[in-house]
Length: 168
Image (cartoon, rainbow, N blue to C red; front, top):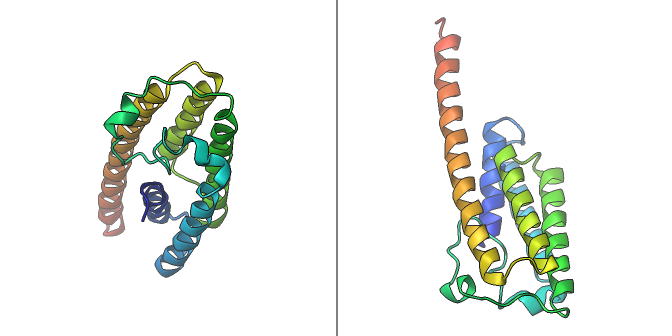
């Protein structure tokens, strides 16, 4: 399982915990279908020119290779269509995920929006590939903290619900 699709599965699990998805078996099948469709989107050969510069699929859990973190190059005119295609693949993957699984948690929407903003900066030439890789690391760390906070809130809510449901 790729790191990005793992992110989608985690989002699906969070949606299921929040009551935003179907039955667990349905969620598993649906998540598998979403992963397959997203993998097709990321396999688009139009994205190939940037595969050596950007760890794909973009993941919040994956460590960035040192050579990518140190990459001081900026996108060439030939690479810009690949960055645009990558942003479109990300957007379409998110659309597919939301249509089949349900809305992503707010923290994940914000993380994905930050990645798209970082891609826009890269496309514009305002940042280097290495700066983009570092930004993905920072976004991933913020995403992890937000996910942990949400998990804690859900656990706390369930404790209070149990207390309330038991006559407390």
